[in-house]
Image 1: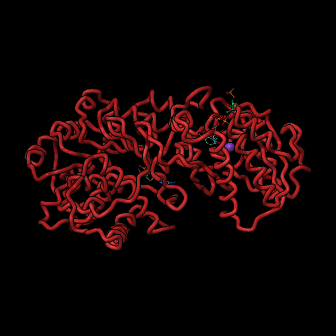
Image 2: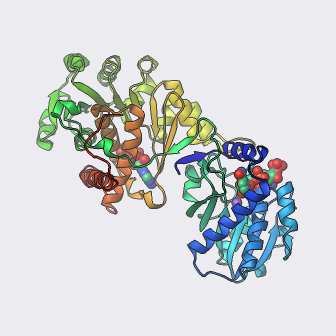
Length: 517
Ligand SMILES: NC(=O)C1=CN([C@@H]2O[C@H](COP(=O)(O)OP(=O)(O)OC[C@H]3O[C@@H](n4cnc5c(N)ncnc54)[C@H](OP(=O)(O)O)[C@@H]3O)[C@@H](O)[C@H]2O)[C@@H](O)CC1
Ligand SMILES: Nc1ncnc2c1ncn2[C@@H]1O[C@H](COP(=O)(O)OP(=O)(O)O)[C@@H](O)[C@H]1O
Ligand SMILES: [K+]
């Protein structure tokens, strides 16, 4: 299950299935409610007692009426609190089938929540298109304070299912849901921005739509790479030569991290090119990485002309002077695969002439600040709190940036978004059993740049290298665990690779044939 849908895509699939007569809305709603109740049992086996169900006016509320009925049939003592009367045909029908107590949510008092083990949040789901007020989030906050487990139906009410941003006119619930249960496919709002942090335990349950045709342009989750990462037979030049450019004396740490990562991920050779004054420092810190003095852009000519040099990495600890800008321009003119990170991104954002040299063999790896310098309008649009109508998500922003710049863009974070100039988007979600908070450490981004550049050097396509790099980076962090610093990431890569190849071998796939993608 690697697709991440927008609410419009989900609605389109549902509408097509209903209008073709393959299913009814009521059947979908019944399965959705059943799925939530099953997920509650799986998450908290044996739990039973008092439950409050908060229902909104739309189909999310409709799911709530089904859940209330099914919980009651299991022996739960259930009370419904409705924000507004049901307003869709399916929700009206499901509300009519509920025979228990139902009161306005505005009347909810602390006494109604006493001893409640569950609070079902069926206020708003994928239909939320405008900000909520305190009448929505305060009852949820009250239930949490009373000790009830918050179960979000489809998505925690107030979160935008397309962007993961909070749509609120003021305050919001503290912390995540205890459990979120979504239907058939995860939505972008379950992994992006606040949405990823607030979903709590997360389950996607089937409701019988999995065979339905998908709309174009569906975003995918990055999953584990496979045997393609292993090395085929050959000599070192068969696996590519990576050139990492570094800054002056005392500034080489970031580039050394990137170079070592490139070597660890399997580039056949890695050379660090640095100003002559930094040669001695770098020589004392590296063995397997080769060193070459590059005083000026002109000194790069013969290296760049060498067909065996298959990729470059520019940016970590690079510097922002005219000399660095000239080296960046020379690199871009050579039209070789390259990762541009850190200072290279700042240079790009300062100089439109250098930016005009960008081409489709590049991967740009900005963090949020660098992204805002590169494409300020898109960053501002993404940062705007969503008002009415569709939100502008991190996916929208990165897709637009990649199309505008004509390169692969990887925008970092726990929700790393990767887009190609042609509009394909992947998200690496460092959430749940892939959470990697220890990656928030100086130099982690330099290692990511080196991993991706090493994969480019080996011949992988820019978008593939970026996606595999994001996955390997988080896996290395998780493999090392707490206490991680950037140096540990490169040293954890062999164990990650071993684990991958062993898994592939266990699955009966040969791990030795690897034509690059
Ligand atoms: N798709 C599927 O396959 C399936 C979908 N299912 C379920 O349906 C859910 C989507 O249902 P939905 O489209 O009816 O939207 P929903 O989230 O209930 O909210 C819309 C309602 O809220 C209102 N409203 C909005 N904002 C508001 C605000 N700030 N303050 C007050 N009101 C506000 C809005 O009014 P309007 O803005 O139109 O005036 C409208 O009345 C989905 O999440 C899933 O749970 C499952 O049953 C099975 C299969
Ligand atoms: N909480 C987090 N969860 C997952 N990944 C994270 C988290 N915080 C940071 N990262 C990752 O760590 C890296 C940090 O890179 P960057 O911001 O460029 O830092 P630096 O320049 O110090 O190397 C990025 O790849 C980012 O995605
Ligand atoms: K909800």
